Amino acid sequence: MKYIEPAPIKDKENPFESMMSRFKIAAQHLGLNEEIYNVLKSPDKQVIINIPITMDDGSIRVFEAYRVIHNNVLGPSKGGVRFDPHVNLDEVKALAAWMTWKCAVVDIPFGGAKGGICCNPREMSSGEIERLTRAYTTSLYDVFGPDTDIPAPDMGTGQREMAWMMDQYSRNSGMTVNGVVTGKPGVLGGSAGRVAATGRGVMVSTLSALEKLKINPYNSTVAVQGFGNVGSHAAQLLVDRGTKVVAISDITGAYYREEGIDITKAIEYRNENRGTLENFDGADKMDDDILTMDVDVLVPAALEDVISMRNADKIKAKLIVEGANGPTSAKADDIIAEKGIVVVPDILANAGGVTVSYFEWVQNRLGYKWTKDRVNRRSDRIMRTSFENVYKTSLKYDVNLRIAAYIVAIDRVGKAYSYRGGF
Ligand code: NAD
Image 1: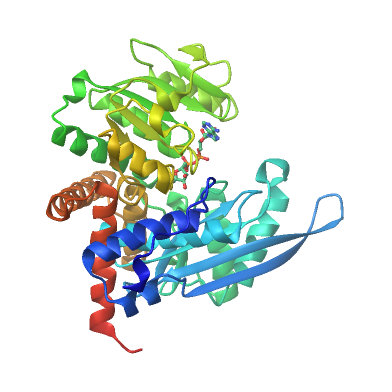
Image 2: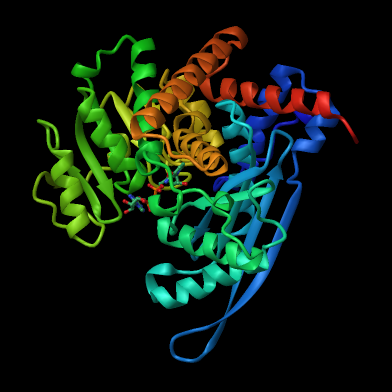
């Protein structure tokens, strides 16, 4: 079959090619129909817009922005909006496709999308960010919608931006439409449990994998790269379940304490220290790379492509649980597999966020609110079932968990096409 040629992988991997190389391997194992492969290899829709905004000093700046819908055969497309100076179309395309696979792995009725604005929110005032967010929402009014395409937060965006997007979309519609975005503040229809949901899913995936590896969580050590939403909640919940988090890191560096770090204290410190761990005195600052530490579990929860050809052979953890999207490059996967390290892939490990986003959307449509307990119970169940399903698939096809997760996802999306047809 033509599609089986290996993807061209260069030294610095293009995120879309990295995603495609895994997709190709999984499609091959599954014997995916070539026509469906061709449908899935390109996004359904790619929108590039330029948004002129009046800055606080009176000047006008133009921001390039994107929304990519990879696929919506399983339901309305779902995916975050990233505010970052380096965001580009290839990255957004890869992230949109990952969303398709992620929703399909955990079997929720959403397709995949992603958006981004090339901007540096750290250098912009709140007013400038608000004008940009509202203009982006209005430009994409025909794309967004509770039944078509539902944005959510991603890097550089949070509840505040979601509230503006929801408000702007609602103004343009002449009525309140809270189901158009997820990750909103609770008072606007946000779900209980959404803020910690991704970290919670990382915790559930970690415990499920430790069980398979026959490692007792109470005897295990953990290092977490990134101490933002995903990393800090994952660290806290892992400590609550008995593991010892010995190292954490953020943009300001890495911090180590052999006896285990008091994560509650670290979170308090970060919250009072403008979001960073700079000068955190609850652990020693370390020079070594957190990624290559001798721990049982490594949770990369910051950036893409941090485990690559440069450092893959130095990784010592027995288990990697990918809190971030795309932290391991496709080439590094092979090296890690050779070393016998188990990887719970991003499209499974961090799917707790989109799962609770789905619950938020369901609650908005019902006009009803679930308790935090109910949200947590249901999302834990979905994460555990999805892990077991991917694990069984990995045994059936004799592949690693990443390829198994792609197989599960592509199989579901492919089946939906075979029933819907209509080409
Ligand atoms: P965030 O902005 O809240 O936190 C990012 C953290 O990474 C910060 O602590 C930052 O200081 C740290 N960081 C940045 N550069 C670093 C570096 N070079 N070394 C070490 N740390 C560094 O972001 P987040 O929401 O926690 O997202 C993190 C990752 O998880 C991203 O890849 C995102 O796409 C992914 N993700 C997030 C969610 C979610 O619900 N927030 C869901 C799925 C996936």
